[in-house]
Length: 234
Image 1 (cartoon, rainbow, N blue to C red):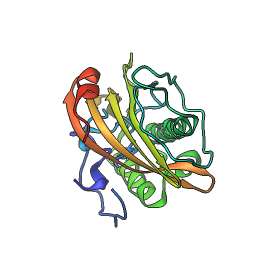
Image 2 (cartoon, rainbow, N blue to C red; image 1 turned 90 degrees about the vertical axis):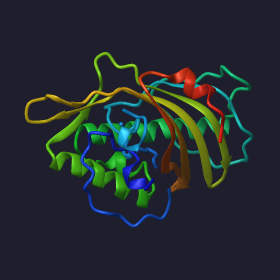
Image 3 (cartoon, one colour; image 1 turned 120 degrees about the vertical axis):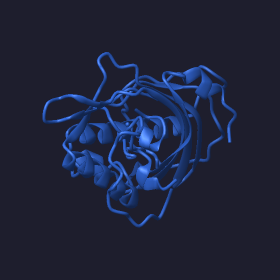
Image 4 (cartoon, rainbow, N blue to C red; image 1 turned 135 degrees about the vertical axis):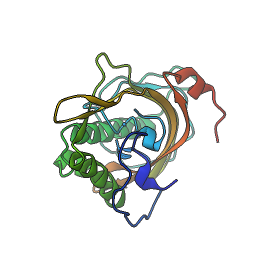
C-alpha cells in the first residue's frame, strides 16, 4: 500500500497527484495524519488522524526497551497510564506525548481544511507532510471536510514504543469515528467507525519529535479495541 493513501477513507476521493515517497504513514498517519490524520482504520479507511479536530485520549498498554534520546515535544491531549506490563519510561513517554500532539495538529488542520497550518507543518517530516497536505487540499477541493462524531468514542492506545535516537517506532491501536461531510450543506459522506492497528515512525528534527510515517497493519469494522490489542504483534 502506498503511503499516499494512508490517511484516506473508503469514501474519500482517490485521484490526488502522486508524490515522490522517501519513507513508508500512515501514519498519521493518516496522518495519516494523512493519512492523513481519519475513521482511523485502514488507509482509505482513514486514519485516526485523518478526521477530527482534537487529539484523542491516549492510554499506555505495554512497553519495549528504549535507548537514550534527546528530549522532544510534549503535551498531547488525553491521559497516559501504564496498564499492561511495565510503565513506559520517561523517554518513551516523551515520544508518546509528541505523537499525540502531532496527531492533534493534523486533525485540527484537516478539520479546518488548512494544509499550511503552522502547527501542522512543524509536526511532520517534510516528505510525509507533503502527502498529508495533498490529502487535506484534495478533500477541500472536493467540497468536503472532517469533524468529530457527537459524541465521539475515538481513542488511541499505545502498544509498543521503541526509541533509538534520532528515530522511534510505535505500535498503536486506534478507534476512529470522525465524520467526513460536505461543506456545502453539512451532510455526512462517511460515518463509518473503524479500529486499526498502526505502525508509526518518528524522527527527531529541529529539536522536536515529528511523525515521519504511519502504516495500517490490520483493521476492524466498529469499535474493536480489545481485538486490536489482542492481535499478534508483527
